[in-house]
Image (cartoon, rainbow, N blue to C red; front, side):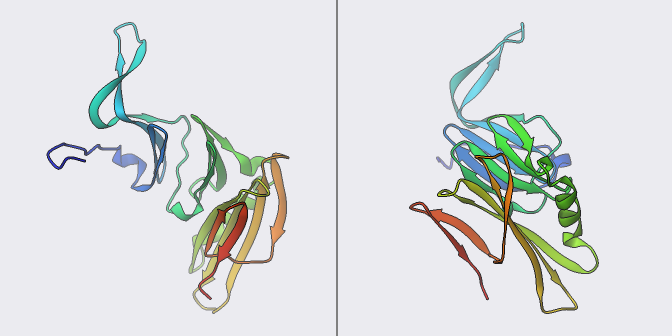
Length: 197
């Protein structure tokens, strides 16, 4: 970017701080604590008086910020974010749900047989003197989103965790795992997890 160019863009502060930015093609996805939005990169939308819109080339680095419908955000868990293709997965601890962003639509995938489980699990991450996090990753080989919820109870040395998988082929939650990852990622069709212990 040219330093002489004004590349700043403001988001609505009522939606909390920006936790994650993700660029896809010529769009920038903005994940705030309470809202998800999309902005155009190096182009802008022009609207006519009749309400019709057209995309045009622009000297703006970041164009108009367009909110994605729904009152969902990524809370303060950007580590839960994972993507594969045009699907983006993340947790929303404020609403106690696991979400998939597909195009301009947010789908609550935790409601597929696991609504009560995730409501309790995500709600307990910061209760009772514990600090918790949700770590996500995508298993390319098995076509699964892996999410691990982890609580570190301050009075105990043991970390309580649950790791499970959402399978795209069956549109549901299929497996619990017995490992606690600090990172989850796929390289060359292989799933890798890493832990600091």
